[in-house]
Length: 130
Image (cartoon, rainbow, N blue to C red):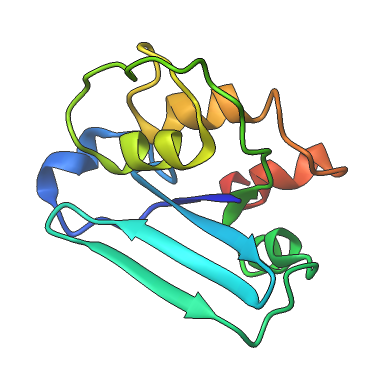
């Protein structure tokens, strides 16, 4: 699952689209969920074992006002991924196996991922934009 966020502590990122200035991911594992938050200065990895792997975490996050997409892990070709600068988008792309030269900002990632989203309710993507 990929989550898009407004908040950023870095003034340079305020030029990005509001609501899509940062992204991070949750991955379902047999014992719960793991959150991967690639920050500019470090990557935070946290376990969330109070949520079962089959829980509707995306729906829960949307009800809290976040933009969350459940996406499949892709099977990319076995070649070097595009050598783009380290960013939250690059980390999330590599977590889900997306290789794309043209996807560099959280908004571009959102536009790309909504096409392959596994969620039933496509209108809930925009809950925090209204």
